[in-house]
Length: 87
Image 1: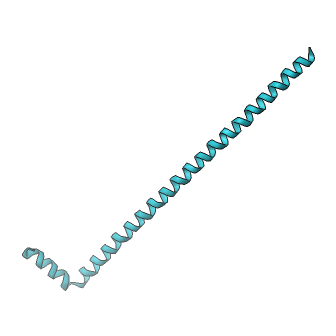
Image 2 (image 1 turned 45 degrees about the vertical axis):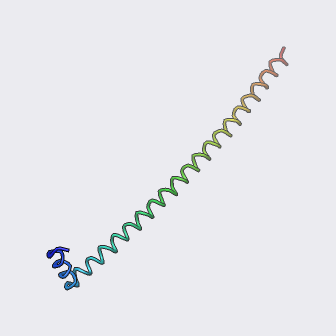
Image 3 (image 1 turned 30 degrees about the vertical axis):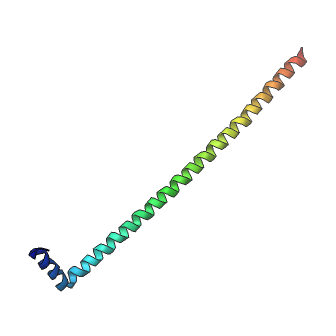
């Protein structure tokens, strides 16, 4: 450790305001890290929810298409039956 570093350490040890400031900065850094971790967890959760909703939408869309196709086939069969009856 150089002489200048020793003087700085000595000054910090003698100055309680600097010690409190250092402690406050460390606590602030810790709080910011915790907040970042929490935000990342929330983003991950939102991404999972979005994927689940998109999968549900895809399933509902496929189901609706199936129902519409069945209705179209039924309507087509009914129309051809009516045409045959008219003959």
